[in-house]
Image (cartoon, rainbow, N blue to C red; front, side, top):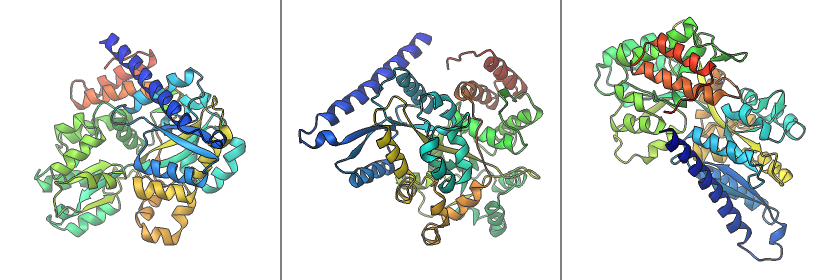
Length: 436
């Protein structure tokens, strides 16, 4: 099993290296025009979505004959987030200058800082004046600006308004949902719904999505996973949070056992195909809905804040991706120009309209005419005020890779809550490697 895992990682590294080399060869040898050598090519690695490709194409159009961005696609369908992180880390260790700009998960900033070009002098004034405040902290490590925000995500809940309208006092229910319903009222509502279709679908598989909901609920008790490099999962609040997730499935039975294996895409499929009532998701679900051909013609999907515990503050976990410039790049000024364009209103609007990811530029939220066309931005602007980041730590992914395994074990009732958290802390403190 271990040898198979090692072989897979090695094979994956070879694949990504070949992709980059092939792109390099094809793009640099494509034309023999005399002025072609004057074009500076920037190699940008990401899961290149349609929205991102539009941004790249527009930048290339604006800088024709001077700079060209070449996208290197690492699709999520073939590489998990953690696999992608390890592939990119291994490539950067090779000190190759083939990659210029890399898209990183917010939680990777501390890990990738040592390979990133410091951006303080070039961007610090710009980012402080133009970027929404919560996003900045995910771009800074050891007091240095080492990344630029690409886009931000924040957790939300969707519900089927047409199904709520069939219940008693639907307007009262919708009012509570709009203002963040308490978990206590949410559970009571489930009893009235009487399991007609799946009540609450969320992602409870052994992966980062489970860490997101766990961290979000834990933050309502004023706690973080990591404080001053110390793991805090042996606290009463940590146990209470995990027990609540267990109870959603096994005690209150408002979530089916199916969620134990769900990551985002499978949770969306299940929710839509089974006419679920509530779904924990990300704003990108708006664009995902269009993909389903068998959707109920009466279905009306509405976004609302996640539930909160009675007497506790509303919290929503941040997601999103940042961009770094590799310190091994030989095209740093050109890469910086692309990052400047990423922060422009034009690029941010493309990402929002096409990809349904949230802008990081203050001007967009303050543009009354644009907000009038896209009223969801008002909803997100308020929600961002209650956003919470996952802990920033150089070994974050190693810590949460182990923790998600044991959280899932507790949700499957293969361990007690206390046992799962105790084992997780022991494994993490001894820097154990878990082969899943």
